[in-house]
Image (cartoon, rainbow, N blue to C red; front, side):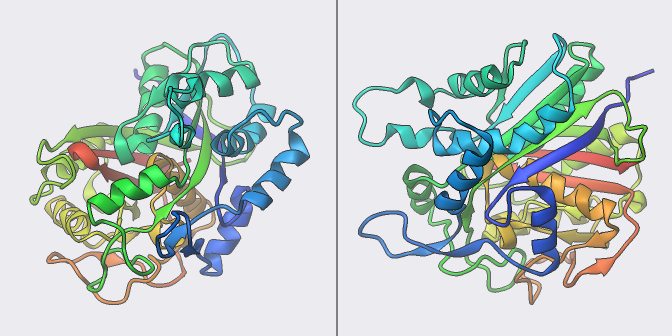
Length: 377
């Protein structure tokens, strides 16, 4: 019999707050972190979801004396610290870091490669600070990284490699990232509108998130979410464009639900990727319809947080679990009129709901697609 794996604790640091409760309350009130920011010199301000650096430093200084950390590293430390304080680190505890670009900002105006720009060095620095005893694992697979990090932890615990795992995910807004998305003409000119007829592109965001994953279910009445199934499939379509038939996402969802032994009608809520780009949202709608999931309540969190790259999948998983814990569905912000060829049941307002089974999906550059199924216990 396979070992059951649970998420029993989580935390996040975002423009909406430095803990989960602050974020949840902001979401209930419909607040968004997306606003106009001027990040690149000689360019007009654009919409993004960015953490206030002054508030970040103020929060960091409350708990940490050492200032020898980059801005992103401070975000990581703040998100992980509350979990490390509550759960013991042993010789059989995994440390998994998910990120797309890590400390890429260190490359600016440098003629040589700084050590901190390597993702392995970033992970080791965080691991050493908290005293992890095992070698850090880095998951960096475009924008599915956060969802895949949960899957990696689950599969390694089930394989007997580790007894438990701390998973953190994070990315920050940088000139490099903005320039990259600009080159694809993917950045929207206004606040993003996932699945909406008038959507015109993404808003970049930044955040860090952390979860504790273990084979021991919480026995003290607190929440536990069982990771029932996972899958990651590459559609091999294009370096930046998703499959027009949704093949990769369709296969990922099908595999995850097969492993979870869950039928379509059992899913209570879908936390989708929903970037507000023309092709991504259309591809997702096609894939969900192929799986006969078009009537399941669905949202995208990008209207609140922007697209947080390697952090998005883990952050949005946390918010979906918080939704289930509070029996409340959060609307897909800025959605007004259906803008995909296939129907979806987009959540338009806060509404009460019994949520037991969650489907979380993500898609990214290079044709990658991932899905996990979570069960509230």
